[in-house]
Length: 365
Ligand code: NAD
Ligand code: IPM
Ligand code: MN
View (tube, rainbow, N blue to C red):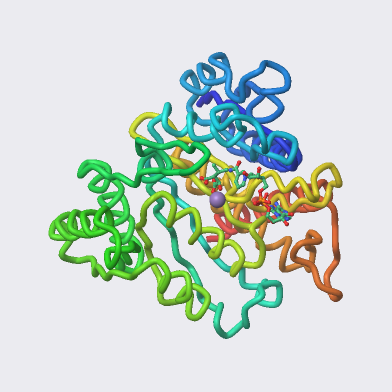
């Protein structure tokens, strides 16, 4: 098989983690005998500096022409005071909207060897495995009117029925293949748009009698994720609530550097770590590449239908952690602290080992 992939490394640690993810991607692609042709483009602050726009038509066209897009992160201090539509972050929103990526899937799983790396206690974390379905192309991020002048600033949170229906369907279908629970997170006690959202989710739920639906206000959900993360299976929520909830989920798993994501629509797909460009640690070869590497795993699964390759990547990350290797953000005194490049090399070494073990397993059956 032959696939086309557009790489958008972006700013800050973006290029460092995309480089790591790409090495893993190439290694696994070769093992599974698929060819992935890559094309790289600037996006974000670096694109603004080079072309005067954070996302060029050419970069966008490359994404339209690809089977998948792999993005690092965009943004940084240097571009914070640009006009809104020229900011690196605006490019990301334009990309998501243009490609119709309405469902942002952010799985939060705690690696077994990892209990001591989280700010939460092991007994609270053990067994945590949930996934956030964040609506990505609507809500307050895109609502009109929006703007600010000397006296006022405003945005609009608006959702249409079809926007809620399609993300809800995805969440319910996923729950069917998991533990069968959907938690809808909203702010229906205060916001009309949330009451509407909740009503639509309840309508959709009738088509999935085998899935249990519950509702939670977003402030409570933020607290519950920290108090007892095991209670969640599938969370479905709007754009801004999902943004906030997924950073919390990122941290309970040890570091924001751990959380991958897939953004899916009906035609296109984009994969990116949940974390940002981390300008405070950029260029130091200390960024955690797990989120980006794991995003490649999601790409193999969702875009290329290669579940085995995705599992191989996850197991190899897990094995590297089990061997005691950590990047600085998740390391403690007992751990072997390694750089981004070293950690990536170790994951690749483990891919080789896990692959060989599994192949042997098949022969001995
Ligand atoms: P951030 O996620 O970049 O960083 C938050 C903290 O987490 C920092 O201390 C950082 O060092 C740490 N961190 C993040 N990723 C890490 C990794 N892989 N390894 C180790 N440590 C990691 O969030 P921020 O500081 O609020 O934002 C910085 C810039 O990134 C802003 O311009 C923001 O808009 C942008 N941003 C972009 C994306 C994206 O492109 N998808 C996402 C979030 C933020
Ligand atoms: C994320 C980021 C983005 C968002 C920003 C950078 C536009 O925080 O992907 O979580 O808010 O969606
Ligand atoms: Mn975010």
